[in-house]
Image (cartoon, rainbow, N blue to C red; front, side, top):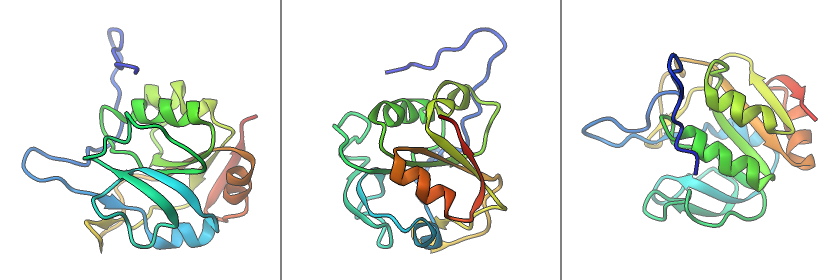
Length: 170
């Protein structure tokens, strides 16, 4: 795995961590995202315990399963833990080559340049999503979101979703 050691002057602002020093907080993707994508996924490798009830996936790994260390298969949905390990999750996602990842639109980060730009397509969202915090809808995110897609069906789903600016990379 990539240890994300950067040279002098580089900082990886990978997003805000899903955890703080006292309590773990899971931010769930809003259900309308999956309605607009119109896809079913085979695996969510970074799911909260019990899964997300509205996420159309057949299987999931939780923190206890350590999805970053497990084998991934089929069409993957990835809303990774945000923070210093975002790059490790995206590295595995890009190498898997089939799925959609949702991250903050942080184009200044090294993970964006090292991994997101190796995807088949990107979609920069219009506006900000209202994520669910531990299952309860909360305020809008503090930053815009970015979808990263690999695989033909996922590229088409992003392209047809009407959720933002679609960019085909390869």
